[in-house]
Structure formats: C-alpha cells, structure tokens
Image 1 (cartoon, one colour):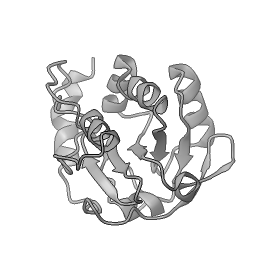
Image 2: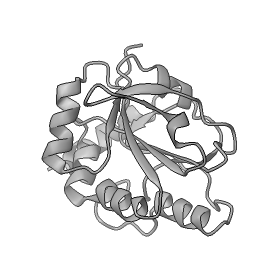
Image 3: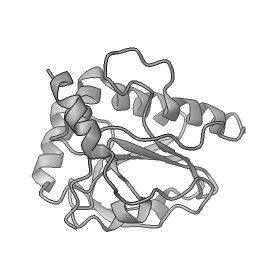
Image 4: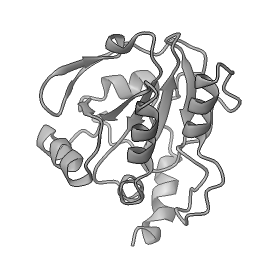
Length: 191
C-alpha cells in the first residue's frame, strides 16, 4: 500500500533541509509539551540514554513502522534497560489530539512531544520522519540517522542502526556507526 509512494517521498526527503547535529556534539536542550499538555525536558533524563524519534502520523514511512511495530518493540525492549524513548512531532499542521490518537491507536509506550513551530527539529537538524537521534549518558549525540537499512520497506533490513547503537552504548563501547542518511517523508516545517 505504501510502496507506491516511496520513490516520490524519497526524492522529497533528499531536498535541502537542516543539517543534523554531528555525533559527539552536545544534544540541544529543549522543553516541549507532551500529548497530555505536560512539559518534558531533555534535562529530565540527564545521565540516561535517550532516543529521539521524529515522527508524523500522516507519513507512510511512519505508518509502515507503526504497523511493523519497529519503534514500539525497540522502546519496550530497551526501556526495560533504562533507555528513554521520546517521539517529537515537528509537523506544522499536527495537533495534540492527533498525537494522542496516534499513540492510542498504536498502543505506543512513549510520548509524542509537540514541536509544531519546528524550533527543536531545526536545532537537531531533523530532516525526515522518521529520523532518529540517540543521546548518550554524557548528553552528547551518539547516533543520528535512519532506523535501519530497509529504505524500500520491503522487510529486507539487515541492520537496525538504532538497536546497534543502543547495544554498543549499554555495553560501554563507542557507537561504531554514528551517522547514517535518514529516509522517510520530509519534515513538514512551518518555515
């Protein structure tokens, strides 16, 4: 169903968008509201590994990963090991109600934070949905890029980059692949 949209969306994702913060640079601080209207700050999780997932409930790539349970399974697996998973929605026309409905429909075990003005998305250089950022315990970006290498969404992924980064970080090792090219829909920024 989604595969017919992939070539056009992949081209859109390649357009000039913000450059991502390089790995090993401090993660930009933020405070955003969750779908319940409560503030959530990156500083709330100081000393923990945090995964930031840029999302848009209208994007076919996000819908694909939701149907496959990709992010949900990783968040549940690694949450048991103290890893924090937060989604961020920088879509200019998204709503708190839309985020809440998406969470409920997909039984997501993590919140979606409102960045509808795109301030945090631009600070991180989020370019696609999904676009993943892993913040290490030291507050620096350990990884940013694609969730995996399955750009065609054909189920032939051989490596999940986020899982690999989390495994290495929790083992006390440096992240062997600190950046990849994200794939998905372009973030629908206000400007």
